[in-house]
Image (cartoon, rainbow, N blue to C red; front, top):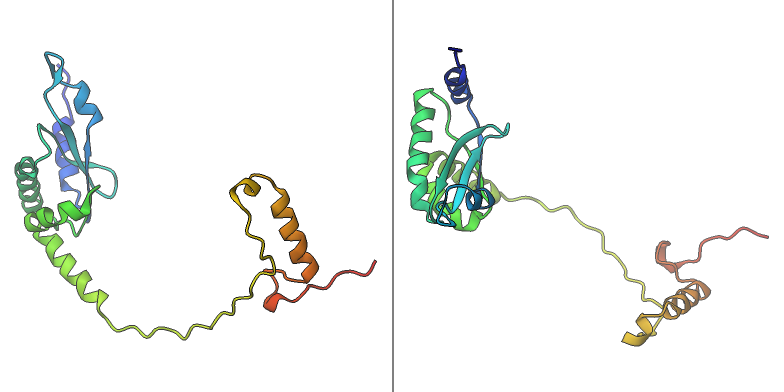
Length: 182
């Protein structure tokens, strides 16, 4: 009977720490797996990966409720504590506004990092003095109607008038660029 190294590999992945956790729900896989009388038993497959793309948490859920996450998050925290690894500081999800309160309550490291980032946003920063830009009005006063927008004649006539009047948007102060003598 051949020996399997699956248990060894699982332990080695658990030993690798991570700083970021990417949480995602896949609804396509669950629609086709474990059908019972033609209906899907699971609603979604939840997958959490680290910054290297390694799966750290994966489980099926039967509804969109976050109460299904509790056991998986508790086991993740227990594993991190057992191997002496730091808890994740950054957390990515497809719906951060709705998920923020739940995950910051469950993962205390996220709450500490959020407090640190919130403190950085209020530092006084001296804004550099920005130059004032002058707007040069366009000599083309023609306002095309919907019917003339379909034809390119309006565009060409407006561009021709701009060239004849010496107004070029790519030159400073609307001055006319030098032309070669023929």
